[in-house]
Every structure is written in structure tokens, then in C-alpha cells.
Amino acid sequence: YIAELTIDPSFQGRGIGGRTLDMLFVLFRAQGRTSVRLVTHPLNKALKLYIRRGFAVTGWIADYEKTGEPRLVLTRRF
Image 1 (tube, rainbow, N blue to C red):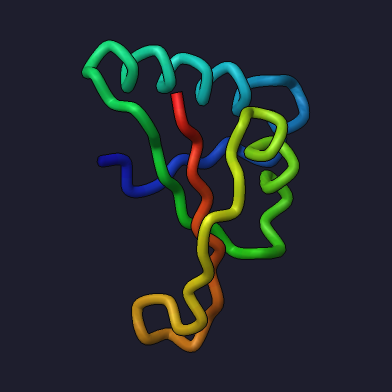
Image 2: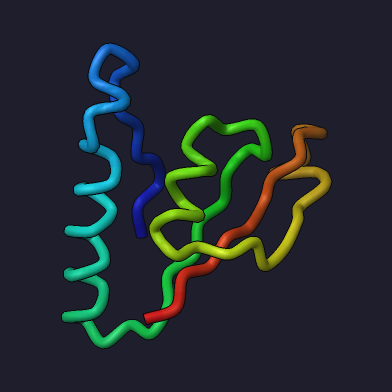
């Protein structure tokens, strides 16, 4: 379980986030996992990255943790 993963804005756009996800995928597969799920804000700039890395939108949370904020649920299968 990873609670949060962010890349400092001054380092974004350099491939760090994509490489980090790729390394996490290797670890998850080594643990025998068949999929990974993440929750993100629908306006998150990283959404395009997630889609390029094989995630698909699999759900929607209208009131995330009772904050009134919406969230997308994305899943990547291995």
C-alpha cells in the first residue's frame, strides 16, 4: 500500500514518474499481484501518464473520504 506518490514540480516532465511507476510494477508483479489500483483527482496532470502506463478508469468516487471531492479509480492489470 502506497499512500501517496508525488514528483516535485521542478522535476516533472523528465520521465521520473513513469520510471518510478515501472519500477513499482516490477515489484508488484514479483509479489504475485495481478493488478494495481490507484485513486486520483480527475484533473490530475498525471492522468495522461497513468493511461500511457496501462491504467484504465474502472470507477468513480463522487465523495472521496467524505470531503465532497470526486476521484477516479484506475486499474492496471498485469
